[in-house]
Length: 587
Image 1: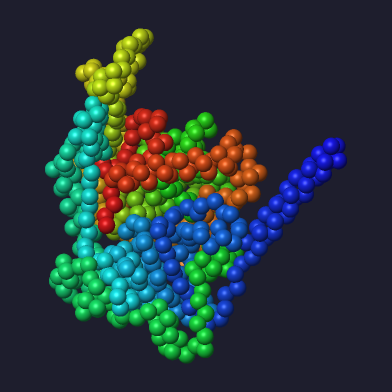
Image 2 (image 1 turned 180 degrees about the horizontal axis):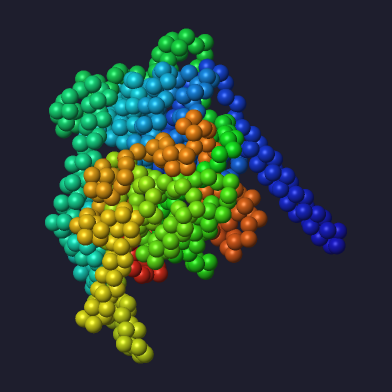
């Protein structure tokens, strides 16, 4: 028996050692940079979203091949590819894109810059929607297969309302907000759009649709009226799309690459995936220049950080970790300037204020530029108000300067279920946020006063950041969402552009030479699997992964119900929020 137990123990030890050796061997294999062949064709096969912040790095071949590239990686690889003699052409193969219109414009601008190098750019599309087609219009030629569908049919904005559903189950959403457009709870308090919401959504659709039509018309050498008439006939079977001038020809992928092969006089087709190219080049953006600048990424809902929060994995903009990142950059004397890149719908008002305080502290120590991505609204706009140059894309969703507080009154549901509630309290407003009763008038007045004071503070921060009187800001506030182009016209942002403009602006502010190469370092640092396994976090990587999975599944259900901006971490704690009046996704 003793020998059996010793043998069993030895077997476990050997199996464990074998697993460790296998893991490190795979990690070593995953660390190898792909070789880039000469006379290659770079294939930009983007799918789904293109995040601002890289997910945890798992250096295993399978995970490496599935990990999405970030927006800054796409921006960088296109800049490198245009100058890399090994890359002879670019082929776009986007599928099922879900990124916003700001990121789309950044990538499209990068493709156009690549095209100016004189290298061919083709697009091969598979059942493209408007997002994929918009990106493809940067190419010289657009191809689809003969039997495919071009699903280009315009834009729509769909808002879903649950008031009657809540009425049926005896639940009421009680909301106080500052700003006539700050109707974040309309989905729960109304059965249709308010006049203010309808006004803003029509304004957004008109501006965004006008931009898309002009881009298509310019790239396809059509008149604006022709494009509008064509889109009104969509979606299209492939031959009809060709007749309308939206695509160039009907070909299969092998025929597209054969065309390039003949045009470039290549012996063989050597495809280079965008992931391989991104991994093959230097991991430090801009090479080994001594002039270091920081690219600080803030993406997701703004929440207050607490170590005992069961959903506090490193997602979203958590005030604690984000403040530490800002201080890290400020304290590093070798970093000569910073770009703060924001992609956020806002969130917790107090967390937003804590972050803005630290952004301003960073601004006093180093040249700073604010760059907005798809979305920098409400709290996302708030943390941009450091007084530094603010840049956005024409189609960034921004503004939404307003505040909201809400609670649930489930008294009717309790009655339907036969639940009785008996309350003892000390303190006049101890049960002000109780879900078992409606808010009384005194409690409502108190909350209304708090929301209004928070709104006044928001206006003051914007007034300071934009260096304009509050009475000029207030008519532009009221919780209204603006597109970047509209925000620029109203003085809420300084200029329209993406990463290239942000770098040029930082060069000027930091007094770098125009031709000086910059070494761009991304913050927060990308976490690796080893960091997770050996880190000192209170919860294990497994716990974090499970909790993250649960929260993401809840958010997927929320999206299915039309609640795309829903974030469980905010609502589980409550508070005063700086959120946009509704979740915006234009398809």
